[in-house]
Image 1 (cartoon, rainbow, N blue to C red):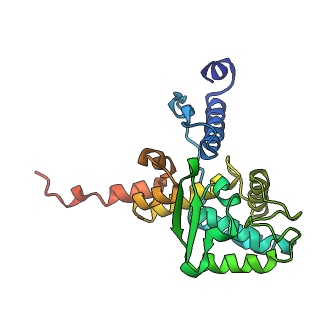
Image 2 (tube, helix red, strand yellow):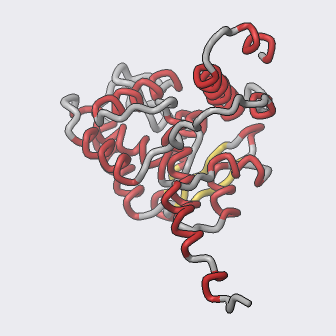
Image 3 (cartoon, rainbow, N blue to C red):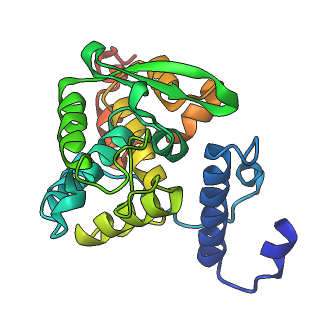
Length: 245
């Protein structure tokens, strides 16, 4: 990978962009359980102006949800809104979502049973909004061909929804909301949900649990701050209140 980057005769900013693309792709491979570690993080990055943090703000998420609610293909709206909420509200991986079965959603107990990497099963609480989104989707799902299957999420052809199809669904929603990011798939929603929780001051151990990370250092990749937030923190510095000699 380093040899490939050295061979590219491009500007530092372009090389930095290539590194970010490779890093994002390997993030996806880690999430899918295809590799254990993202080695792209150890590559020395050229000094250049950093791009804006690549996660969605709360306002951008609202635009995505509002845009999807107006999707002309009404048959898929409730399914897609539930997908988006599982990524942003409880930070699930795409593989965890598409492999959900009817018995995994214990709506009466407001719990969702998730099969993590290497077959580990964990339960995650559901809020009222998620329960209602499940019920709305189930009401439409019964009209799908193949509704007798046990998979919760079905394609319009009545088959189990695939990771590629979910990526396309999210990418189209971003395009509909006129939002352009380096990442455009479900990992962006998962990343954004975790980042917004951390920014709101939620317990990082609980964020780690939602993400399904065994190591808190992995969770730290999802933590961001805005320049304005940093400025405000410095302004709040307690040294302002210290008597100067």
